[in-house]
Length: 228
Image: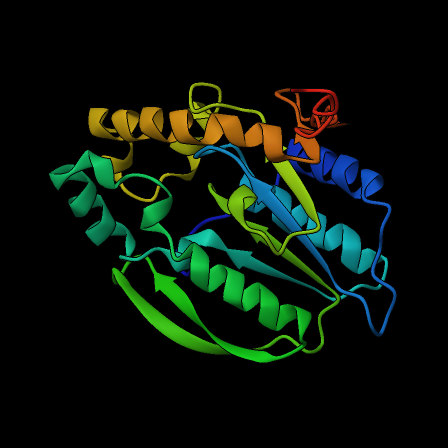
């Protein structure tokens, strides 16, 4: 998203290094391609960690692109804020064109070109840009709800809630209204939606920015034998 500010700090780099170390399944060039999602609550450091992770992959010689969920919102930022204030029930995955993100990840797999949205924050508008994905080996997709995307190989979840990330949001804020009481309501709603997404993740970035593998998810079919 144009007009956004990203400052990669040492703790973001430490988290990215931990994720990078645990992703052992690198794409085999020229055929394979890898998609990594980085999800978490507002201010958790998604954009910064995605940027640092891309740098780690590029140091290995992999060309990496980042797709930001912020570019895929139905409405541009300030317009979206107005819609939320009219109806807080608007807050959630329906705010985002996850279907378009899925389509673009499929095009990434196919080494194709695409026309993607580009949010211009200050102008409160969404432009369109042409992107050639054919040179890239790895795509990192980052955003609040990207754990829900299907075309992902490794799902990373940042386990920092909006209370823990408040200082980071204050540092990165683009407009004074982002820290008004209504925004705290929005973040509380988002927390209720996002917290269960941790169960879908492969890797967890903990509150201290260490990284661990997620606990194995139980197989819902285990134990069904013998049921009458």
